[in-house]
Length: 201
Image (cartoon, rainbow, N blue to C red; front, side, top):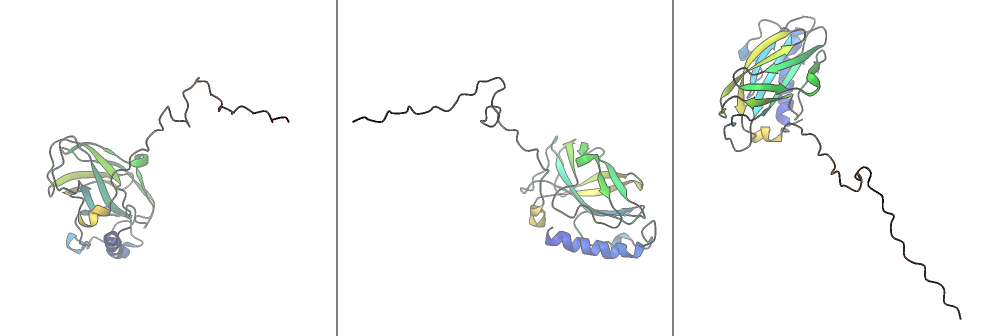
């Protein structure tokens, strides 16, 4: 966990502590009292949503049409029962979203998303998206319902350079690898050196 993420997490936990025993976060907590960070922030029926960002590359260039971008965020469930993030969409900006395992489990009062790995990957940008611009992102929770946030597109610089890109699947072994011989191919035995007879005197 990066130092920046730790600082944001401590601040977010301090803000949500006042909601213990309540189904929803205290209504008097407003936008101006949220922990300062670079991303989108919000509340949805007892779930604190912190520092939601889309990360591009380190060059600061706009995301090309058709490209994907990792989505990072921290979620804290202050409800009295576990919940689950079941769907993400970005209407008008991305065509789809991939979430590992089909969703993100949210245990009660346990921060999720504090590490460097993104929560989801938004896929198929519908248009070119400028770094520094904002994208509307909808989060749908199994129990808490749906909310929409304005999420900034940011370059992979400064503390964001420590975040991981979308994890890719490991490369499949070559079918001609010695560990994976072609099915049905004969296995050649190792050549053996001829045995020289002992000289007789």
